[in-house]
Image (cartoon, rainbow, N blue to C red; front, side, top):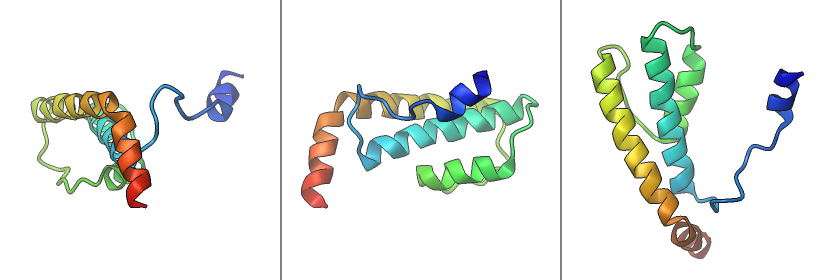
Length: 99
C-alpha cells in the first residue's frame, strides 16, 4: 500500500515554480545523495546514478571518489539549490522569455 501511494503520488511542488536550472540543481543534489548512499554500502543501481548524473549535467568520474569528497560536493550542491529556490520566480520568467 505504501509503495503504491509513493509511486502514484504527486511528483511536483507547488511551492517553487519550475525552471531548467532549478531542475538541474535538484538532480545534482539527488546524484550526490545517491553516491553517498552507495559509498555507505547501500545497493544503488548504476543506471539510476547515471540517469541522475546526466539530468544534472555533470561530467564526473565515479571511481576515485571517497566519502569526504562526496559530502563536500553534496554541500555545495545544496547551497546552489537553496540559492536557486530563492530566485525561482526570476529563473522561471527568464526561461519563459527565452523559449
